[in-house]
Length: 143
Image (cartoon, rainbow, N blue to C red; front, side):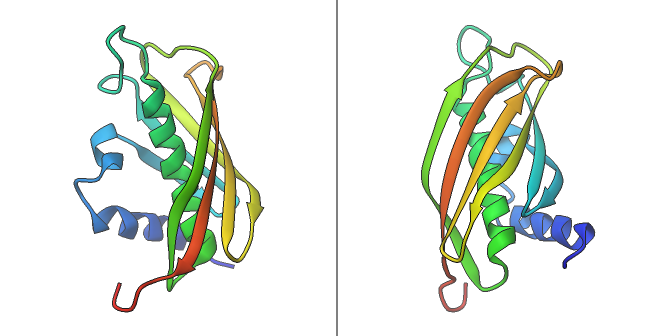
């Protein structure tokens, strides 16, 4: 079993692969990462639509980030993970502060990993529920 500090180091290595990634631009901060549970925060400010509400697409970016990281941690070294499908149901608006995404696996297999991601506001109210399915493949040689 890999300890949590090794897993967080893995998350940091993923971040370092592209310091100008969407994850960085959106202000997503991973605070917990194991294949069984991932938690990250994201500011509402800077991620809003014209009415000043959290953009639904921002919630989906948070969900895809968590599901993809979880699938990569599950897959391990020498594997590449790509998203196959994502959906989202938006329950309520967030207007300020941070939202928190919590991803838990629905299924972790050899070739597919599927996560449910619940996004909540600072009061713990559900803002969005998303499901992401990732394909796990062998990494390209030299990747």
